[in-house]
Picture 1 (cartoon, one colour):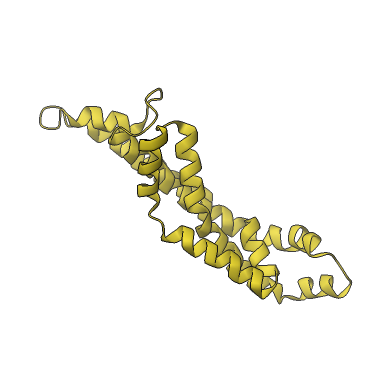
Picture 2 (cartoon, rainbow, N blue to C red):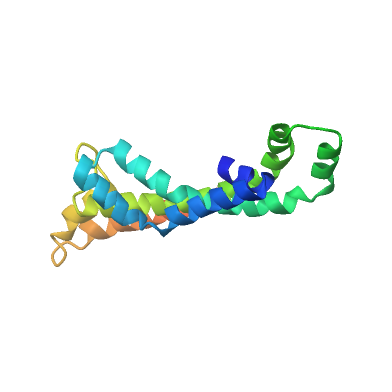
Length: 173
């Protein structure tokens, strides 16, 4: 959110710098970067959370930037600028409360995708081996695909349901 607000309220060169950085990060395939990091440094929960977080922030930043650009020309922001309010105060007092609901809705969708990515990594054995994951449960049940379909189907349904519920709950205002 900070990057999006800074890009939306800042100078043109700052906007270009931040959004081109976001474009570069978005061009990286997040799941492949996570596989690379998990295979090189281990599939610990911290490594996976860092990789998934650091590859998914541009989505939120671009949405927040778009909202900030639309708020930048609103009367209440112009009034604050006219009376000499500092840009940081404008960002926290006026822009942040307006962009938060949209950012939180998008964050729920991004978080649901991160849940699915973690499960995909755990399914192929690159997750944290010390923690039980839906991906590990699906992989263990998948070996009995033809004899006991429920051993992989119910964890898979729970995984999809959790990802969908996170997206639905976060989209409510």
